Image (cartoon, rainbow, N blue to C red; front, side, top):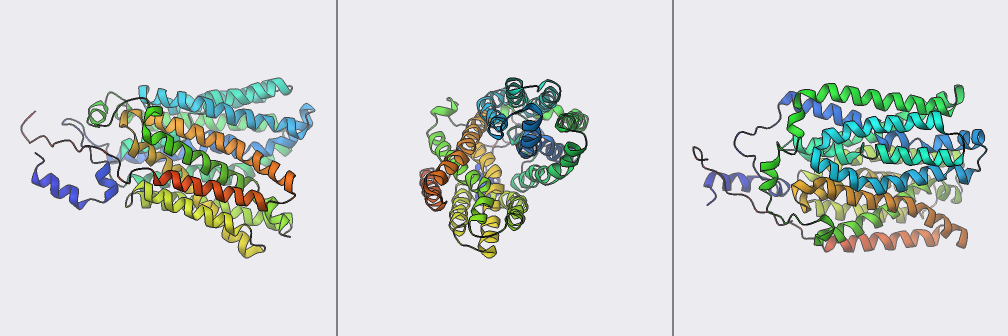
Length: 437
């Protein structure tokens, strides 16, 4: 039977804590304060220098110089980011499997080095359309593991309490990279060329890998599967393949639809505001609120996840997305700013929510695969959504019907979340009495 002291401890915790109440076995210890601090710095730096920040948020800077230098059309140059996005979607599940087998620290470091190698290849080998597309594919194949897939797991293994708040703070690394890297890279492109800018990205990612390795070398054993095997074994949920889990279909559909909707709105935000009569400069200034709001959204979502169920927060996030999409139809700066703030909050919350969905609804030993498959669906949704929205505009001459369709997709995502159990089934192991093995 569960001891009275353990019962009182469980009742004193928040609902979010109870779900993750599996204790460590005797002989295991929580990571030291120094180790936790090193993990926070390493994960923050890794997300700032990882794939999402260094490639996804800077790819638009390279379209014009690459097309001019290689003699490509704008459409041909934009195939590079598309190939990279599809490649990341294909390889993220493989990185998830590697994470479950070798641990997040190994995957994060190797993927950061691989990302640096991909950027170096682009700076040296991108000579024509085929080589440009091949290098774009290499960036995804080698670097797609340097995302929240690896760095979120580092945080979740390092902290036993308040992991949501810490995770939310760490996730702001992507937002910081999105804000800082473009204005730092643009002068390099203008002064030295796009190849030198890719070389600078290569050095940045490689140097980040070196710093993270030096920070974490003392604590590397804590992040190995062998160290966490006894805790993972205490998780009583069925270790069947992730894609066979009943929750995967519901979460996968929701993530895909949310990505189609949210990324489409972000990509087409400025054109929508211009269609309302704003100048391109004013629309771009309002769009900047999305990035700032996303940073706040990551921290707010992380804090909330320490106090409410992830299913509840997902409901709230999708509800905010619906309101933000509806507000896009309102002309003027007030409507634009309101929608930008709401959409940014949702974009920021998505990464935190995805991490906790993988943590709460799947066995601990399959976190990498669960996150990898669902994040792959997010990447696919984000790749096809803006294109569908663009064709919708071409067919109708406005974004009105597109926004209605996006609202319908979000309602379907909301319904998919409603099918998830509020409290994932997880047996709380019986405490081992002191003095017994």
